[in-house]
Length: 257
View 1 (cartoon, helix red, strand yellow):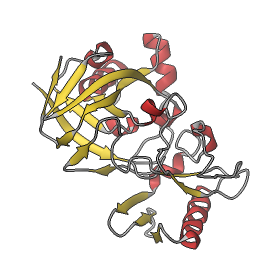
View 2 (cartoon, one colour):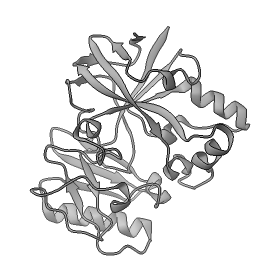
View 3 (cartoon, one colour):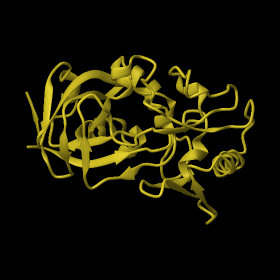
View 4 (tube, one colour):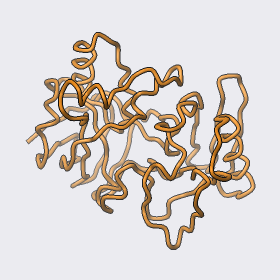
């Protein structure tokens, strides 16, 4: 039996995962509050009214800044408050309705990274959109939900002789019980989890962000390059469109039709 093992959202693009015990999905929409916020890299000005999806290289992201993985964040939905903590115990409470607090948060992250940016970063919020990596492809893909098959991660780890943390792949849904690489054959097929129906619409091409160890915040692998060398592609996991909404939680059976 294929089972949904873990559920995650990533409220701020590039920052830490938040595990979920329950989530309500809606048709045509992505994981609630997933990638709703992002930090620009200081090279452009954000205007919510005219914003068009931009590539992830225009944001502060793990592929360029491994030190992001050392920050732990938590979003309090009701209070609209973000908490960010560093490994040395520093923390910051951010009122997301306070522009000055958001500016302090962006500066806090920039100082933590210690990297030369093109300009001061800005914390930006999506209004009817989200800052997913595939948002540049279409509105539908912007709202896709990402899935990782844990059996595939274990298989490549066995073949490479390394232990690969599945959290490197920053997915929303983690499943187990399927055959390794089975998900690569699910394109245009439907998955049912409880009352929720999802359609596999795209394999997930992996980028340099997967090379960052989520526990040490160090770049210690070259997953996309190694995949290309061994398999001739760098796809791992799939994106899903929510066809019919409902509630899902870890432990639910996943059926593929």
